[in-house]
View 1 (cartoon, rainbow, N blue to C red):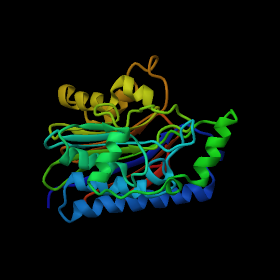
View 2 (view 1 turned 180 degrees about the vertical axis):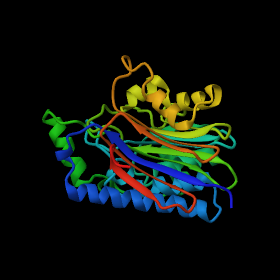
View 3 (view 1 turned 30 degrees about the horizontal axis):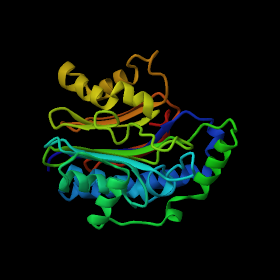
View 4 (view 1 turned 30 degrees about the vertical axis):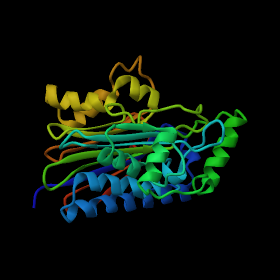
Length: 304
């Protein structure tokens, strides 16, 4: 059996540890385990990296403890607007959507765009119409608006000194056929301006995959990640400089740090199945499983 691996993240952020209640931490750990298992099962039975990353991200989109799909942040108007992307390292095909509402699993919509659309990127109403045309699962507004997101939105709107939630979920995988893939999905930043687009749906910004090097998913301050094109930076460092994937992620996080200050987290896997989980934050919800080894899940940066 050829080597296979999956790495996931549920967002990286710098925050006061007291702001993460034990029950929320436990729920996030359980959610990471579930997502990792969903993706790993696909790989273990010989499925594609593309199917694996979609399954893992779907699992986190369905879990209200992550800022994607059901647990999405609310924009300034109190609305959900979700972004997602997916990329196939074998063909360099990709699909991305942004500003999506009502679609239960934005990453599956991105996959549908990749598979069935002549374009790479659809936004807003066009993305929604495409979702309806292709029979994707839809949900009413109240499905997405959780109590936690509403509370955080209220606090931000009242201009309390609170770090806005800006997490993302993502997955990268290597399958038994040696193919790489990435998927990234987010509910954006709590209280963001309507129409704001972060790094998650941008190919080369928050997501990139190519069989000749690696697959990468980013999380953190979207504007900073976008300006550094950090997912593509990792790919370039692996491909052209020959850096090991963990060193490439570390170098990308440190790229022009004086100009690109902010929270940055990166997960990656290369074509040999070497993995990376790097962050400059104190929290990065993350997990990985290589082959039939024991799964690993962590939240605090000092773990593992």
